[in-house]
Length: 423
Image 1 (tube, rainbow, N blue to C red):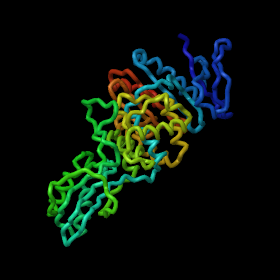
Image 2 (image 1 turned 90 degrees about the vertical axis):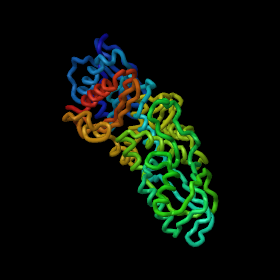
Image 3 (image 1 turned 180 degrees about the vertical axis):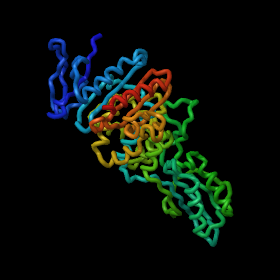
Image 4 (image 1 turned 90 degrees about the horizontal axis):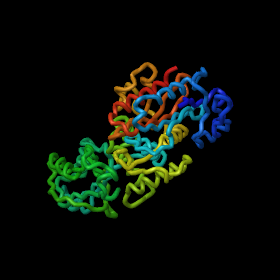
């Protein structure tokens, strides 16, 4: 089969034009007409020349990528790949970019970008403590309400602060119940399409150190401070007229960093449900979150019906996206400074931290590639940003599907990134 190369030459960069029409045979070459770059994401067709033709950047990058399509891995697996030059606002390379494929943890980028777009970079997670009844001397003749906001960063220090607030009220005895308000979300505790034998996070609105034993921990901590309290637990909704004892907050950027750099599934699901809870719904559900994600997909010019959104972390085997969708989202984030200023520093850095700390330590990729990794059985993926040799910022998505060894997919992705970054 005759090799063909995608070519976006200096003509595109200088004139702002983009290949859009169906390539036509002219002698031994395939050529295409050029259209304004505003429609650069609208057509899968590309401009081709034979690989014997020596061309400058980005054609040298395109040549390297084309050669990587001959990798033995691709003879028995599926590949979806798209590279976009954000600086020039034009496509560099695409291969199977419209295939719907499982994203694995690259799904966390969909969640992150939607959350930053919907909630804003100043959004804060909140867990609150209230009381009802009367304070008579050192005795609370009433209930304590713990109101959950599904904050995965709520830890022992935060719980200690709650106990100190109770002590600060002068209370040493509680003659009432310890009530958990879980009304922030529905009762679903596992995501759609999660495998029963995975290490799945528990989707509870009340969390302490990522575990769902909030009320038990709270009572134990109060007893450690000599507060008399019974094991009188209940679930309920905060009533009108309750008095605030205190609240603990964590910024969305704090959640985002661990979610992306360490690929923390609970952090991603908590963000998914923050999206779901926005807009004042009574009990947030995965369906609510999907509605907001689909609106963003429409906003970037794609049809949300072409994709399947199951959860926020990528654990589900029911998620289906495409490299084109991921690149469009990365482009959207780049063009919105509030989103990008939170997203970019939260991504793993090649050879330095997070899930990329041991990967791509070569001269051109280390400290350069910032991308989200993804791995589930049969899937290896990578999507994010990198700078090319001419200092253009590129957005890319690589999904390898059907890989029996995740290391094979990671090795291929590292080669792609090296091809993008080297001179």
